[in-house]
Image: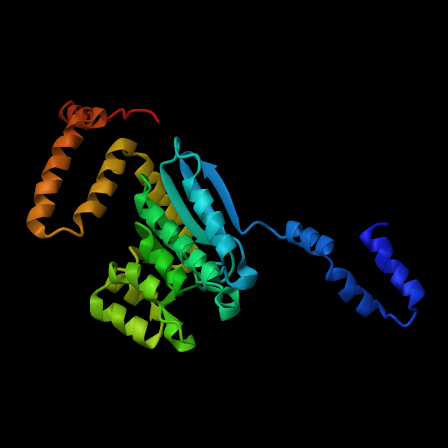
Length: 295
C-alpha cells in the first residue's frame, strides 16, 4: 500500500480526522519530506559564458543565508571546470545579498561536530576564492551581514549598489563575528573593523568604498552592467599572467616590506619567462595587439 493510500485509509477509519489534520499527518512522512526537498529550487544558480562564471545565491526566502548546504553548493560551483574559466562573479537573488550563517543551524542542539563542519566549510569557501587562479568579483545589491560581509571581503573585487549596507552584527545575538573578522580585518582599517565587530552597526556603501571593503559603488540600476564591464576587461588579458599575479599578491601582502620586494622581484622575472610575458612585450614594441595563449 502506498503512503498516500495508507493515510487516506485513516480518514475512513476515523471520520473525525479533519482535512487540516490529515495534511499535517501526511506532510510529516519521510516520503513527503523527500519529495518536498527535491521540489525546492537549487540554492545556487550557475551560468558560464565566454569564460565568465556567474554564481547566484538563490535562497532569497531565507535572505540567502549561508547554511551548510548553501556553502557546499557554493564550494562546488567555485571549484569545478576551471579550464576555460577567466572570471567568477558572485551575486544574489532578492533584496539581501546574504544575511550570513543560518542561525537555526547554530543552536546548541545541533552539536559540536555539526558546528565545526559549518565553520570549516565556510573557511574552505573563503580560502578557495583567494586561491583560485582567476579573479572573483562580488556583485552586491542590498544587505551583506556577518558571513555575507565576510564573503564580500574575501572576493578580489566588489561592486556595490548605492543602497547596499554592510555589517557584522553577531555580537547582538551573543555570537561575535570572529571568522568574518578575519576577512574584514584584512580589508578595512583595524579601528573600522573593530567598531563594526563591537557594535554590529551597518556601514553604508559609500563608507565601505572609503574604507576599502568594496572597489566601486554605482547606482542600483548599474551594478550588473559595471560588474560585467570589469569581468570582460579581465577576459582581455592573459590568463596565465593574471593567475601568477593574483597568487603573488596574496603571498606578498602578509610579508614585511623588504621580503615582499625580494619575493616580488622573483615573480617579475618569472612573469617575463612566461609565453604571454614575452608576447606582451613584443606586441608593445611592435605596436600591435598581443595574441595571448589559448586556454
